[in-house]
Image (cartoon, rainbow, N blue to C red):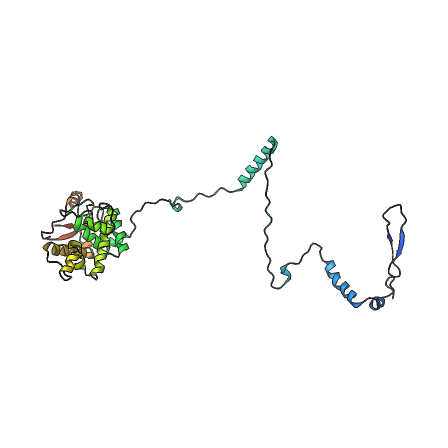
Amino acid sequence: MAIIKRLWYYQSAGNTGAPRYLIPALETHSLSFFMTKLPPAILLLIFVSVPALAQNPSYAIDNFDFHNGVRVYEPPPKVTVVPAKGLTARGRSAKKANQVKLNAAVPAPSPVSPALIQPTLMSNPPTGDLSLLHGYTTGSSQVDGYLVESGNKNGVDPLLLYSVMHQESSFKPHAISPKGARGLMQLMPGTAIRFGVTNIFDPKQNIEGGARYLRFLTDRFNGDLSLVLAGYNACEGAVEKYGWKVPPYAETHEYVRRISRRYSLIQDPNSALYARTVNGRELAGLQAKTSIPLALYERTVSTVRLPDGRLQLMSQ
């Protein structure tokens, strides 16, 4: 059966006034003619091209055409706006109006909480858990903090530091002994230099120096508290001289007894339970007292409760 009888088309010569020529096209009588006359390779090319021509011309293959494809995001190109020079008054007004619109579209930053703002330069307040002092105080929260901080840093019980300080200076930062010991922990000038103290009357440095010395003595005498205290009072050389025993000095023996008593007392919960509350007049007298000289026997030391509820040692 014939598909196309005869196909004619016009071809323009490029000039509308020029004559048109009739060009005979391919004359096909049947489908069998194509099958016998055209090579199979050309037929294959035709059948493959037809689906591709049927697609949208704007379509391009992407990786989602495959089973394991992943779409790659490509950001839009940045447009750089070059400001025009020599804007007229009208152009400047339009630019200013656009700037106002842009500023209105950008939300204002939310205020930052003051608690989140940390200053670059910070002071060095004492850091430490004051509960480690079991409610006892030197009368100064700052000094209490230094006790805990230096104790934790050097591995020395803050309660032991507190006991030594009460005997040495009665918590007076500018105390000076007849032998020349100075400050809260009563450091001799040579001992202060030895353990890095540059200002012997500075509470923080003085406490740190005392804590370092106690740490040194603890390591040297294998944690023997009596020898540690004897070394703090008479120096480690005297302890070693007498065969690693408390030197036969009456003052050193009294010193070891007093601080051992204080250290045991403030660790006893019953001391706080039965502490007597002092009034303002008694507190003023307590703060004015100085340590009883080591040449004298201290009868007793007890815990009192201050008007603010904190605890403190009082010797008699």
